Length: 320
Image (cartoon, rainbow, N blue to C red; front, side, top):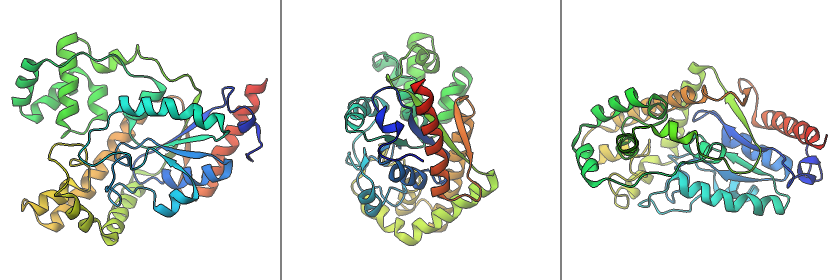
């Protein structure tokens, strides 16, 4: 069992593995991260691309104020909903944060389902090419379905982790390819990770059980006031921003604009969330360094204990 005086903390600045909790949306990552951080005396670092936004609380399943009081969370509620937050900014902030936490002997516990953010730390980011106004204008005039189909053909790895409606990132990926003749995924192979030892732990559920959990979670969000939260945000979020396009909100915005009924919007939230989970699972299959934990029938405390034991074992191996 890891305690604040264990090998993990004694070796906090000597290469101890920093855990990253992965898993599809609604798999229970946040609860396990909370239990793990409490177990080891650590602090949580958010790696979810939407939890950074203030006001997107219910629809992102953001840790509650009570949970954030129990364990300190970093990179939560750091942006206004009309800002654009990206992987580069995330990497820079984490690069500053990790040495601070380790110097305080606080084990960082990274948690999130945003694959690009995880790879920004563990793989790195490449030096991007500049924008090409003429090319961008042409791409902006092209139907999104056409753009996504082209990206699937040219760079299936990048396409698999992007949402089909994400015009900004799809356009950027094609812009990079058209100017370099090389895909983003290829360029990223020459990128460098942050100088830490990361260890990935993933939560695994039967697909049908995961989808059922997603549907139940959407119902809980609605009961908690998701429609009202989205209504308040609708006047503050600009169309086209990441916050506007967040699942759970964009469907309700369409309802408020008279483009669908509330029932249809709810059905789309569930469907889009299941589709997102499927894309996450597809992307995770690329990783050969994940310790997968069967989350069926185990509570967060038991799963956190399994992660803690693995980290402690890894710390002892590092002393040899």
